[in-house]
Amino acid sequence: MSKFIKKIEKNKAVPFCFLAVAVIMIGVGLVRGEHLVVLQKAVNICLECIGIG
Image 1 (spheres, rainbow, N blue to C red):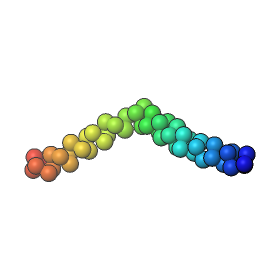
Image 2: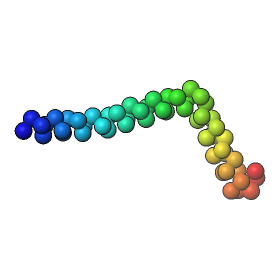
Image 3: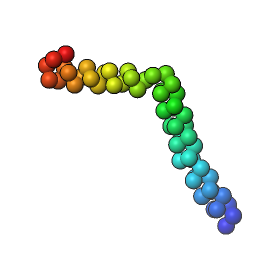
Image 4: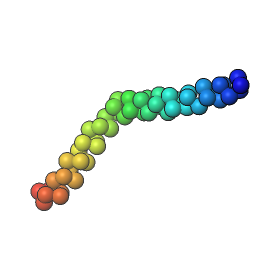
C-alpha cells in the first residue's frame, strides 16, 4: 500500500515541475523582451489583414 501512495505523490510532483519550468521560461522571455517582438509581429499581421501594412 505504501508503494501505491508514493507513486501517487510522485505523479503529483510532475505537473508542478512543468509549471515551475513554464514560469521560469516566461520570466526569461520577459527579461529578453520577447513580448515586444510578439506584439510587433501581431500589429504587422493585423495591419496587413486590413490592407494598410
